[in-house]
Length: 138
Image 1 (tube, rainbow, N blue to C red):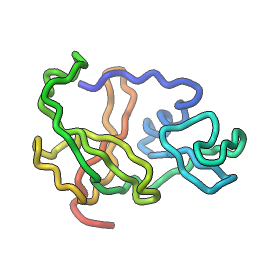
Image 2: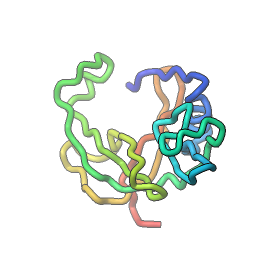
Image 3: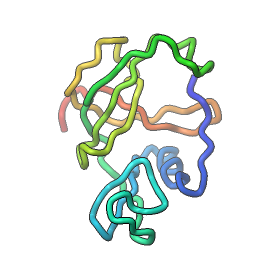
Image 4: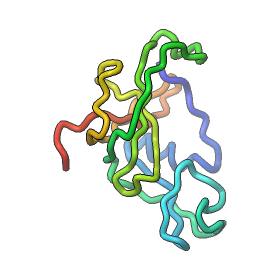
């Protein structure tokens, strides 16, 4: 079971897009850079008025992974062991997101494989981006 998410003013556009099954990332028009996690100012140039949200393809690659055997989060203990994969986005490999890789057996993660975003609901109904190994490259 996934924990509930409580969006704030900064992250609300990300979570609203996720509920619509769209992946958006903050984008700075001043320096032409994507950034994640979101910030109140650009992580690159410091702009505080050039940030927008941009929809991305929802495709990436598995950069690396680990297996969690002893999770301190009570709600995740029943799911142990589970994968935690680092996903890099096709639009910017410097952007990293994390996933349990639903459908991928524990410790059988194909590092370097293409992935695509899927959206799963949390306990409070908020959808979160997860990633699954793509059946074919697009």
